[in-house]
Length: 527
Image (cartoon, rainbow, N blue to C red; front, side, top):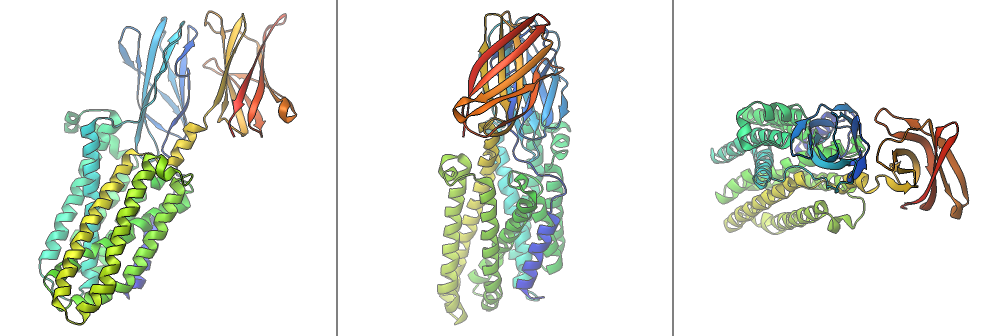
């Protein structure tokens, strides 16, 4: 089978194996809570609630009381909603700390502050993995994993592809073997540290099964299983079997497309195959560097044949790599300004600059050194060896930059936070109400209403109606009856708000047959 045809077949196989079997999601974000952060709630609050931008799996929920004591709570997950039954609460300020794992396998954590009977200071939510040593460890093991994929699996493919039936000595395979072991260490060590990150534990907890079991139960588990299978398959082939090294590449590429930010971008039918293709072509391109470097530094006569064999498929590799990378970038970014305004975008720019240097060096090798080598110039061969060594360093730099993305949620996942509920607080001398439109902004919305008396107790009501209107846009009243929820909130559905700007809000509360309250206010919808 011709190398170019095999390259395209491997790319197609990796894409097919990575085809999604379930709906992919973004990096989870907290988009709402009840109680809201920094608010006061009535006595007898039975349930707290957290709403995320996607379905999540709760890991830890802990309530810290005014006296500093803390108790773990048992959550009830319902997709993107997490209900948290509360014990009887005395007056004072409380902290509800939460830790969940999203579909991309990454933990998200934060704290909601609220009080019973008096106002509480707001607390900001945070993403997990703030321990510097844990961040460094996760990054280092991820770099080892990527190095194992490119210089281990990739080199096994490169040896069986570029030097078929030829003996190039033991040195190239020894280097590839070291990379394979490094990749296995990165996969296994990264699994344990990911478990610590998920549970918010310490390094000492690695001695127990908890972190390992927790990490393996997320999407990281099957991902690393596929990658370890690819590393093992490459080791069995020892750089001599093109079918085994091709299978190893496909397994590893599939593993990359199972978890992480890029793997969970929507639409999944595009993001996962693109990520698998990107990973496969990176391995095939980078994997050719070790055998080429060894042949060049030894000025082997078969270097010219290897370069000719590598030349045309390498162009296809670069083209597919670039196309797949462009697709992934388009899915992760919202606007061009995200390249400079977000941490994710700045890492992408640094990666693109490094890849551009790689491409420039490869182009120089192809246009300047390869013709001289083919004409028998031994000096050019040694120069090529040094140039390829620089390419390998640049490849490692790319791996280091890609590993940083573990800690930088992509801009697309920030949309849910930025467009979350538009809210307003209205009150009278007898009552107050917090009203939120979800998800907020223009389009279809639902409303959440929390009714309180002036003493912060639950306001008893037989019926609640919410009315929205926009006189400036000549939109008359949109009136919806609200339904009382088990946690004391009222919900009203069916609000379509097609224009931005100020909307008039009216809450009509029927206390009994002879007592009716009216609360008025305005809220602003962003474009």
